[in-house]
Length: 96
Image (cartoon, rainbow, N blue to C red; front, side, top):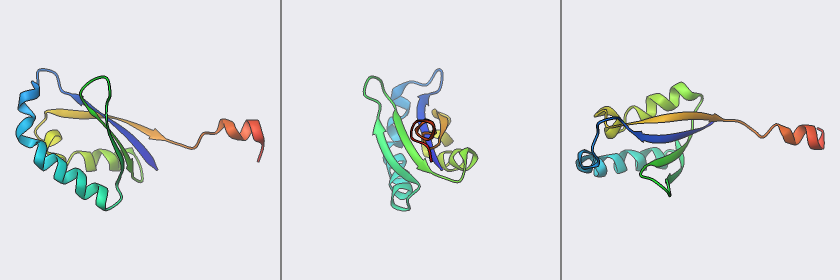
């Protein structure tokens, strides 16, 4: 299942506090990308933040994986999780 994870800065956290963790955060992201868990990574275009599409069995697995990221462990950022499913309306339009 694909899970969309959208980052959010936790209340009261200044951006400067994130800087020391960027390299280790990128290393974790790269490892997850190499093993096929992180399928796509993007920066949000109109504000600070990232969007990650994960390949996981469910949202709980995605939360556990994201919980290992240094910025999440340090309680500097968190993510909103959205499970993605196939676009069902095609069936009603085109039949089986």
